[in-house]
Amino acid sequence: MAWLALVLLIDVLNPRPTFVLSVLYGIAALIACAVLSPAWTALVAATATVLAVASGVWNHTWGTTQQVVRIVDVLLVGVAAVAVATVRVRRERQVARLVAIADVAQRAILPIVPAQAGPVRVAARYVSAARDAVVGGDLYDCYRYTSPASNDPERVRFIIGDVRGKGIAGVEQAARVIRAFRQSAALEPTLPLVANAMDRYLTDFFEPEEFVTALLVDVSDTSRVVLVSCGHPPALLRRSDGSLALLEAPPGLPLGMSLSDAQPYQDLTVPWSPGDRLLLYTDGLSEARDRDGEFFSPLALGPALSGPEVPKAMDAVLEAVGRHTPEALLGDDLALLLLECGAPDRESTPEPREVLRPREPTVPDVSAPPAAGTPPNHPPGLDAPLSHAGDARAGLSSVPR
Image 1 (tube, rainbow, N blue to C red):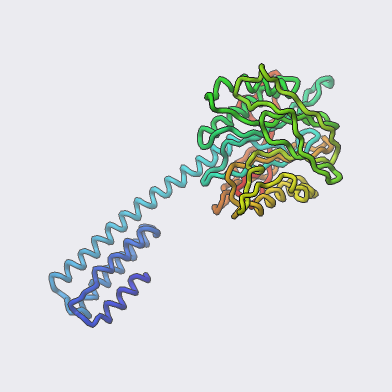
Image 2: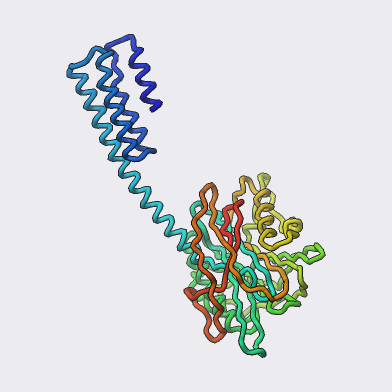
């Protein structure tokens, strides 16, 4: 409409009647078809045609052949603009449907962890570094089994990992790693054996240069936490007294390299007590850079981990990382798990979740209530119902769970 007004003003005030601008009215319809609906584009085209007809009055060209040609030109441009707007809107709606389907598919790959698993309170976050992506090659999962037999202890195990590779291939392999973890965590009595079983399973599916770094954690015992590192960054332990420590488990090779028999995995056992918190993260956190290229130090998260509640503490962690990185943008995907030692008397009630991406609106919630755990003699597959839930924040591009 601004273009029509500008051309009309120049056309009326034009001191040279031989210099006619009426054909320029048609450009307004071309501008409209790029941003407006077909109906509004048709309205702009009709307005442009009326002005092209009226311009013959003040240009003294009414009834001439040239005037008729100009009117037909503006009219044809308007009709073409309406056709372009129709095609554009149809394609935009198709893309919107495909994006919604892709979002649901991506979120289905990344599990929902429970708000409390046995003696542990849990919060999880996923931050995708890729634009228009919800998840990538990073992963986390929780396995919990409670036996009806009193002599069979409860198992509560977690994994956090990072698959080498990005895009669809990374997402596919991340889903495979989660399946391997659920099967092995259900069957193997110790974490080193879980890592060995996962390594053997994944080797058949990974290419020679593919692997996954992972950190396995067992918190079945309320007095200690057991960790096995498969080439993954160390966990950060915050004691209830505020002290911090990076837990350097015995180094192990990444999973999927078929080298576990030559170099078996070893575990690290650390005592912990109610109020202690354990932060598991991928290298998206430790490799986050500021404007000067300085890496983010996990030990700087002491104040953030001191929050009164686990979900709020996790929000504070993401805010700290966001303040460190320019415009809250990460160079790599970031998966986070925060575990707090507590009493095992709370039920695993799911927390609400939402999916947020940079500069985009929130994706509607499609989560489902968690199902009961599966006994060890029936290890759940990738498509089995899970005992998971999650929580939310709106700072970085996070998948709160």
